[in-house]
Length: 468
Image (cartoon, one colour):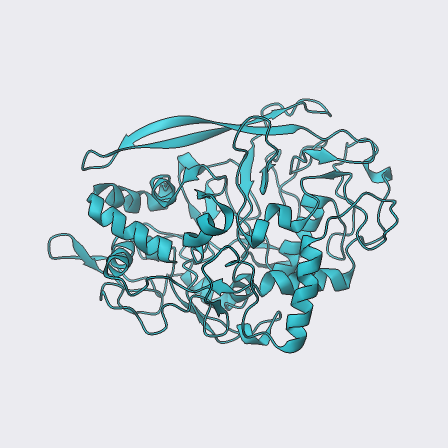
């Protein structure tokens, strides 16, 4: 299927191009669009650029939804404990887990990062693995002892599966103007394996993302996203874009994947339930079986917190909470440098995948999410990102070289909220410049054009990205 909205880049003048965004508007006009600052639409944008910018409710929620948002916030931040316990409302953690609370990975509803030094436990960063095959539904098949995710914590007398660490090799490079740069290539180390060596299984670091606007992304009509896919590159622009059709547990059929680094989850609810299950070892209606690898000794006999451990009401409140976090408004969107950067963003072809604008359709999370013009800068599709970012892990239709285009809204506030700018799926990039320079595969041409820019042009592009 052809990409319907991304415009062809046509060389004009000395270096420029004409280009337009997902709704056919000219990104080169150097004039702010009406409403451009409203990234989450009129009812989903919050004007707050402080330390809580990712943690505020959408202003369009009604009174009951605001109440449920508060309850979901409480669940999101509550610490789960081992079973049996004096409380029956929050027991059942483990026996293997990565975190005790949702907020420990998504601190202030924001982004995690890899370990900063040897011995530091990851905060919002985990490691996935697979034996390289898929089950009948398309899920990756995990190791018999460790499953698909290495849990570095355990309770009820079980030893943690392993300790996790990451080290880096600096890879030097140079812009066309001679300015040097360095990228860091990660190597993940798994040690103290309690259930036997992992051997040569591929390891993929995954960083927890900030949660703003998830409900709005879910409200983009599936047909709109599928219309952007061009798996055989029929328009010849070098950009394909494939939908990841994944198993929808509620509907018991394959539907479009939208969430997760490989678009492996179809809905906010399933993303939340999967995190409860995989990261904390908690069962729910969607994942009623304990999170035990087939050959994990004694795991299925460990004490539980009931069945399910996360009751339906709790799951629905955390789903509403996660799906109703507002998107922070743009900053400096009218500044000339930001507008020049926006034009460069289009001229380099970045907007072909990071599609700026959509209109939402129906929503099952909140009525205020419906029929909003939003600016998430993503197409939610899979793209081949080249050897440098390949992790070798297939997930449903996603190959080991493909990643979902991540939304860029909120990008410029990660430093403010979380105190770092460690980007890409595993946190290897120290800021947006390094993130761009890691782009390969379908994005290689755009990356090379970026390397040819002057320092002033690169600064303008960074100003634009930080305004999102």
